[in-house]
Image (cartoon, rainbow, N blue to C red; front, side, top):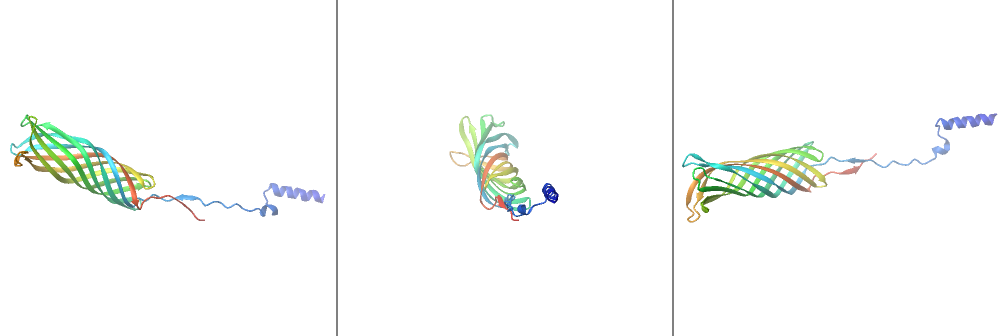
Length: 247
């Protein structure tokens, strides 16, 4: 009878989950440390390339006639490079960026004051230098930018198929822009960006190609829009990745 009672007690102890002495001696397998992710940092220096499309309105005005000489859009593809630096504090990012683009933007129109004349513009290059302010959600950065802008312009007046006058001029103004940048692999990130450049109104002396003397004077107002896709590489600072936590 005593053996039956002891056996019943042992059975009930096992069923109730009471550890036996043998079970207590079994080794406990250690849990591996869990991986945690460090938030991406935008702090550091970077360089990259971009491609895009630009279009700009060119308004011509003849001061001698006190009348508009018409307008046209100079548009075309562009490509170039950028170099910049960021500093992140919390979710905010501040930085500076310089950008240089080579373009094939060009256009022309017939002068309403002289229907024999074709007024043309070509923009070989554009440059901007701007400050940036962004808001980061880990690997995605939303930003605005603003600063100075420069454009190299080639102007021409074609009369009956022959070059009547020309000018080469580098003009300056201001710019604003906005974009989204996403870090997709290590130090690499891609961006899409829009820029508006206002280069004001400038008085341009058009030169006679035969003598180099001033043949005519015009006032030209210029505004440019740019849409770009870019690729950046952070060559110092920035990034983020997994680390092992400690217990």
